[in-house]
Amino acid sequence: MIDQVLQNLQDTEPQGVQRLCDWLRIASISADPKFAEQCQDAAQWAADRLAEAGLEARVLPTGSAAEPGHPCVLAKTPNADTGRGPHVLFYGHYDVQPPDPLDLWESGPFDPLVKPADDKVPAEHIVARGASDDKGQVAMFLEALRAWMEVGGEPAGGLRMTVLLEGEEESGSENLEKFLKEHEPALKGCDFCLISDTGMISRTRPAITYGVRGLAYTQIRLHGPDKDVHSGFWGGRMPNPLNELTRVLAQMWDEDRRITIDGFYDDLVEATAEERAEWASLNIDVPAMLRNIGLGPEADIGEAGFTSIEREWSRPTAEINGIWGGYTGAGAKTVIPAYATAKVSFRLVADQDPKDIADKFFAWLQGRTPPGCRWELEDMHGGHPSSVDPTSPWLSQARRAMEQATGMDVALIKTGGSIPVAGMLKDSLGLDTVFMGFGLDDDRVHSPNEKFELPCFRMGARSHAVLIDLLREGSA
Ligand code: BES
Ligand code: MN
Ligand code: MN
Image (cartoon, rainbow, N blue to C red; front, side, top):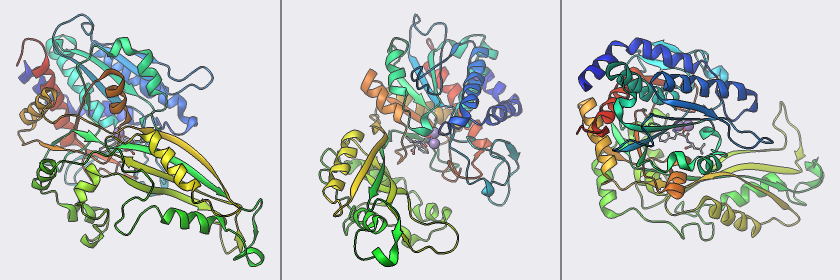
């Protein structure tokens, strides 16, 4: 039967791509409240596809009546609670990052274009916000479900399946924890979570990701004088909040680029020597990755004593994501502002806790408060790091499925990115997550002209179809 399912996927690919384009036209930007209706529509669109594939699908509210969040889609095959055999929880997100800066897009971010290969992209590809992160990757899974239903007449080929699609992943998953708690009965029978929201090593080297980093995201403001003042009268006589904020933040890294916040590394679990050796043997072309973002090999800098890949996969970082204050308009203005603001975030690795790290950062700042100034500190959101034992049988099945579907060797990698749901599922339900993703490093996720290449879409749809086959009862 799997051969017919794969044939169906091949025959219907143009329609599958058009279906994805329909979804990409819905501007489901979760960070901006103006797009709440589009988020609702994008959720409903996905629920309709799941229903067509024979699942019982619901669009459910999150948050509270006073502060509603974007809805989640929760769907299950009719046999999910009562059947036998493995029960898979598939997670994806239908929300997308804001598209700005708009003037850098070559076509509208919500006006998907299917483009032929060109001198920059070696294959046919779809350009739109969300093409790779994550609608395109969820769509591969939806196509696999559709093909199984069309060919076999059974939802998910008889595999027990629950599907959860979130609408706030790109803005911090703030309502997800509560949602998971409320719907625990629907989720707790699952054996593992499967996510397609990560990447491959290259076009010819698919990969399973066995770990994501955590995140602690903060906004900090340093207040000085109670009004903006003349820089000639007051410069050099009292704290300039912008000068002082940058002085303090510059102390966050020592000479070796290690983070100086007290206790920052206390809970960190180091990568093992074997792991580091495995990663080195992947021979990932770091100079090429740097070249892709316009940098030469000399730009390979970071915490001393670790390779570029080790720094991405196994070391925590501190990043200033934005910093502003004072006069930023046209011309010159000799002013010292009343306050200065920065967004500062930390990528975390096991067993660092986002809340604990934000607290440690804030205590460190308080210990460095410039004379006469005060801090306004906000812990915006966070997510736990999460990884699965690379010897997990679920991971092995996913790897086998990918190998069968692509005919290529599948590597085991980690990623520096974060997907908060994985940590929550581990905490609340003890579920492991396997990340089976098909993005490419140069997909421009979160950037202008985001794209997803059709060969990736194809590999993903096939891999999901084969994984369903390997897991469903009576096969394997
Ligand atoms: N899909 C990404 C994370 C990702 C991308 C992992 C590529 C591995 C490879 C996800 O949508 C994302 O952007 N996550 C945010 C999390 C945050 C907003 C809580 C991130 O990593 O910044
Ligand atoms: Mn994503
Ligand atoms: Mn993202």
